[in-house]
Image (cartoon, rainbow, N blue to C red):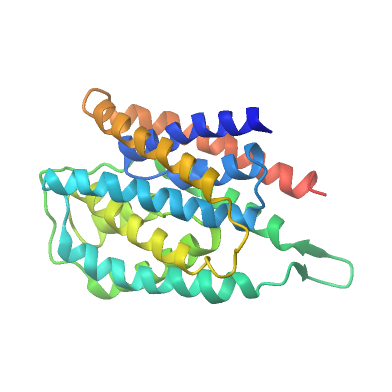
Length: 268
């Protein structure tokens, strides 16, 4: 078990590096790491993921803010409905889902399996976004944003993020670019602050429901992830982000497909 924890901590570096390079994708790795490497239950793993991604994204967001790559107005208008949505999901919806969900007289599904299947689907959808990256000119700021769409999108992203324990950066960035009409580089920095806030708020909704948290393991994992985001930010200055995003997209697609097959056909 100790050896697996060491592997998990090493992979936590990768979680931070991915966040530093792309501004999203940390939870796509952290949840499977907690579940399959560190033997954490899926429900608790989503809570751990929210904490790790929240702290790591906050550090990254502060770095972006120092570089003046954060749009605070859109962070507030988009972030508030997202925060409310993710808190309600983690505090009231997820805890009240039955451990065994009866679909019919002969078909039932476990809550843990449902979460991992839904998470795998989110992974596959996000991987397609990464493999087929957006073509956005960083120099162009488009016309007036549609704030109704921004609020609605924030609520939906909060529901998804709260359910699967994901920061939602891979959903937030396209929304900021195409709805809030801000340049890609600023969208990444703004996304990190929104992700950090909604992840930590979502985690607060879990604290009372999960009294058996391993704070020592969670703290060490988070430290490694934070170290990773500093590495990722430095690498981002030297590497082609488009090629990295495509490569990571394929990795996420393969991992998501593996989880989907494993949970549907081989879960106990």
